[in-house]
Image 1: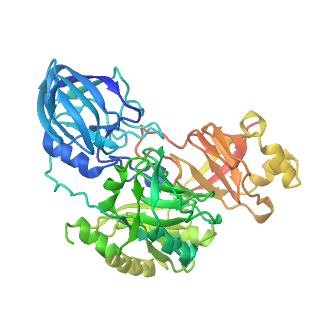
Image 2 (image 1 turned 90 degrees about the vertical axis):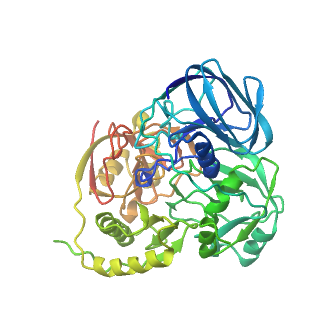
Image 3 (image 1 turned 30 degrees about the horizontal axis):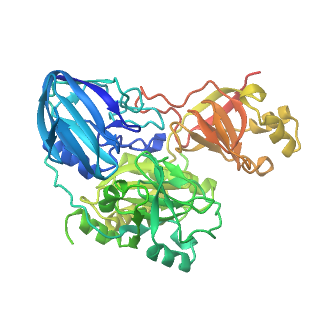
Length: 299
Length: 223
């Protein structure tokens, strides 16, 4: 189904994302893709969509359907959504057509929400993906974040290879990790405190990384190591020269030279991405095998 | 036919639950770099089951795998077999490049300081810098960013103590026995010694970069 959508109010760091641009690490590009992959998949399930969608941030999004019609799916965090003034459930699925106004405003929790369509964006993929990396100015709409006034063209999509993904459940408790490639470089006492101290999500967060506040001073006395620059993956927790921990996210640099104490497991990365500034976060080590059992939906 | 020297034994480390790092050394070293390139060439030609992406780094190779299709023990086991096979493998074909570059001036604000630190004149430094071909050690860090090396010991200089907020695409960066070419604007703590029109990143081409690990580069001075 074709439609034309005009964005009316857009929060900063709102971008077009699809599953990501893989295979480009060796050329110096990380994959990008949704900060909350599970929510992106759920919005897709609700819209019966396989293509790109809009990742919006805390403050939400307002838009008007200028012409055509399509089915939409909304998920991620907890937001307030209204269609023509009537409240929608969250997450939501709806059919929209010309003249409809969708308004998404901040809700109880989460940083990222997803709006997906059962049509594809009228945008050429760049290196195999429509995902935006604003850091390297690639993909999406000219590699930039979306702005009020932007027009989104949705084209009829005959190749909607919608796949019904299992919907992940968010779990409570510490964020689980695999010890990092430089964990041995941290004294045993620092490793112990990393697993027992409370950290807080700082205000310095974006699609590249989330800085943590280390109020207990776990890494206060960390001395900077001289390391060869090595591959980085989303979820890596590196300790900067000034002792601040930073969690690398979807738009990470492909390589990094700071010591990495840990890497978050895939099953907990989405939940971490949705944590808001000020929220406390604790970490617990698990084995790779345990992480894989969680990914397969086993306990 | 060039046989690789005996490869250093790698350390295989998990990075999270969907990647392994095969690391040949913990410092930048010619032999470890050659091993990382050789392993990448081998695995590109004959991929391991369940491995979805390879990324060669300076002295390591990242293997992203699909945890639903394989597990790290299986990948590590297959790797061991490949390493044995690699011992006598031929060097990967590489391309020779001549890259015109201007040293110093507006595009190379740190040339004088670099030459002073090494006790040379800027033109002597440029001549010494370009005296031998450099090898592409790896691409990464930023789109199209390439590490070239290794320079001989008498050209060794650590990074600057302060970071320049932005250098332009095409900047030649110099530090720690290496020269890098920035293909995009970026902040850097490396010394900026020159500039080239050569661009190693074009998002409209696939692959988007031209230089590959193992290629040889010779700089030609443009006055």
